[in-house]
Structures are given as C-alpha cells and as structure tokens.
Image (cartoon, rainbow, N blue to C red; front, side):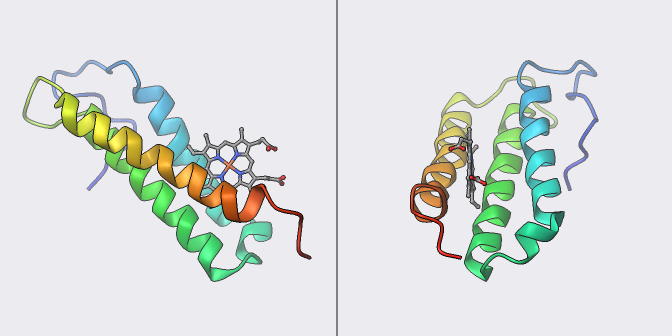
Length: 99
Ligand code: HEC
C-alpha cells in the first residue's frame, strides 16, 4: 500500500516527506532490534501502532490522485502520531526501569 521513496502524485517530493519517512523507517528498524523483541508484547504493539500512525500521517501528507493536502486530516493524523509518543513514554520511559 505504502511505497516509501516514491514522490508525490505530481512527481515532486513534498515538504515533510523526508521527515515522516524517517520516522516510519525508525519505527521499522526499532521493531527489528533484539532489545525490542525482548520487550513486553504491549511495548511492541505500541511501537507497531506508532509506526502505523506515522504511516497514516505520511499518507495524509502525500495524497494520491489529488493535489491538495487535506489539512484537517493531516492535523488529526499528526495529533494521533504524537499521542503514541506520549502514551508509550508514560508507561515505558518516564518510569524507573523494571528489569
Ligand atoms: C513504543 C514506545 C515508544 C514510542 C511509540 C515512542 N517512544 Fe520515545 N522513547 C521510548 C523509550 C522506552 C525511551 C527511553 C529509551 C531509553 O532510555 O533507553 C524513549 C526515548 C525517547 C527520546 C530520548 C530522550 C530520553 O528521554 O532519553 C526521545 C527524544 C523520544 N523518545 C522521542 C519520541 C517521539 C518524538 C516519539 C513519537 C514520534 C516517540 N519517542 C515514540 C519509547 C517510545
């Protein structure tokens, strides 16, 4: 469905492409790390969710078959992509290490 590295419909990369692709890629790579494989299921689920939200944001910023970005959709996707950061940090970063 997603084709990372493929520029926008008009053949020109849009602002934000590189940044969001970078985020999606970071999440993908993180999911492959052995340290992450050892984490609880929930952690990996949230990381997967975070990747999906980042992909969703990427999709809204790079609409196919249309020229204009749907600003409301992009804003909602941005909020959703940001919410997973906070969500996961509250549980797994901003607490004393439990291992
Ligand atoms: C699935 C869980 C998870 C998600 C999703 C996540 N993070 Fe994190 N993040 C962590 C954990 C755990 C650490 C602490 C890593 C460590 O100390 O080894 C961390 C550390 C960080 C740090 C380093 C600062 C520090 O406290 O050491 C930054 C910056 C950061 N995250 C930003 C983000 C942003 C921005 C997003 C969303 C776009 C995000 N993270 C999404 C779990 C997550």
